[in-house]
Image (cartoon, rainbow, N blue to C red; front, side):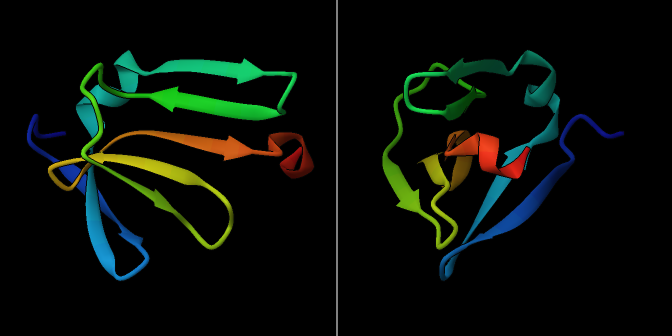
Length: 77
């Protein structure tokens, strides 16, 4: 896989990319009190936060996904 390879996903009417090389460095935390799974791909601060129709919260930095949160994650069980 090329170091610069990434994948795109639709974010409402926008496009965002995920750097696949950062997935191996992802920091994943499950918050049992809120039943939310948080996936952090970068320590950078988001310049945009998007709420998707399915309730997933996506943090973006210059159009790239730097993290996302999945509320009520256990319902996907």
